Length: 154
Image: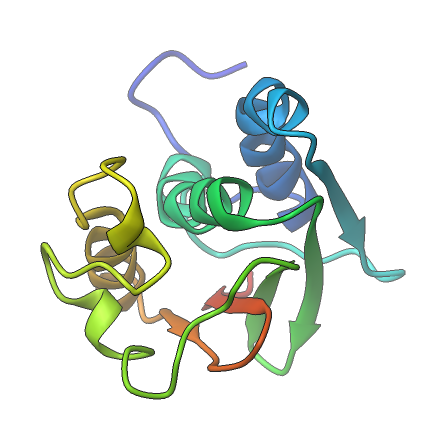
């Protein structure tokens, strides 16, 4: 184990996903949401610090648990030189009009505007941090929630 403040590339992207999912397991249970990691059959390594990878993934999973209606899946796979975390839920999803706007600070999607939870900063910070390490966070419009976090592979 490394001392606090020291970071190395994570051996497994699944470890990142599992750590984030574990952080929201109690919240998911209390909301009746089945939250699971579905990993790829091949080992996938993230080429950024574990702390950074988790910070990027946290707001995406938190939103999926908040707006999902019973099920959230975090899938981990490699796509070329990237690690892909696909976060899917059966909540209301995002509209074509808001799929980019929700990444602006203090902007919340239509699903979030009906609640007082959150300030609309999580996704903006997640995308900014992902892009700072040559990754990205994207939302795909649709009737269900579908977000993709791409980070460099090791």
